[in-house]
Length: 71
Image (cartoon, rainbow, N blue to C red; front, side):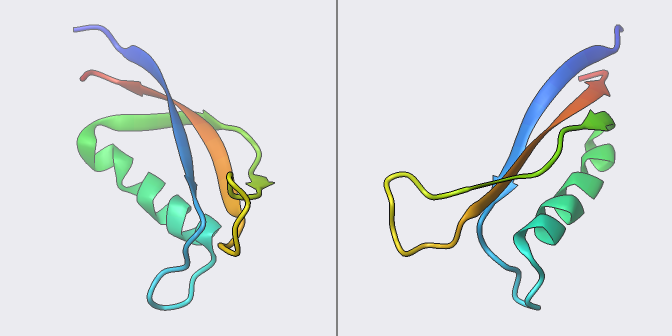
């Protein structure tokens, strides 16, 4: 099997039940990728964006990660 290089878009705009910021929620989700044989090799900066279409919902926080996997 070959290591496959993949790019994953990560983001969200909701806090967790314990009040964590959306970036902390996304980072926790990213930490579980290794459980599925997906290993992050690098990550972009976080970008804050408004919802489209415009609404009263919270802004999104987004990044991309580069990873390797045998999947």
